[in-house]
Length: 143
Image (cartoon, helix red, strand yellow):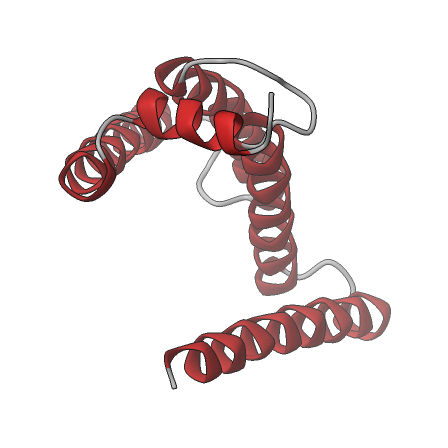
């Protein structure tokens, strides 16, 4: 049952994302670059870019042996400029409002820290350390 719900949720997310991209493209054609469409497209771009960065940093497809803390740092350091670029291009808040940008960066860093700490605690309780689990995984694959 759990796999059915998970599969349905993933399908709904994919359908929603594709529909939003198509509707935004149609909106650009018929209404031009209005604020709502530009913000929505920049959010979609941010989501896609962060997914690509996640695949880059957290799989061994590109980067082989790298400690988990280094992967988190790499993701965090490359994710922030991507979000800043999307925010600037999408007009999430005024470019000349320094307070908004400082708050944005602070919220990003606090959120990244909180999610990392929460996931680390959860993972240590369920599987041990990240590096030990990664070593077990590599051993099971014969590397």
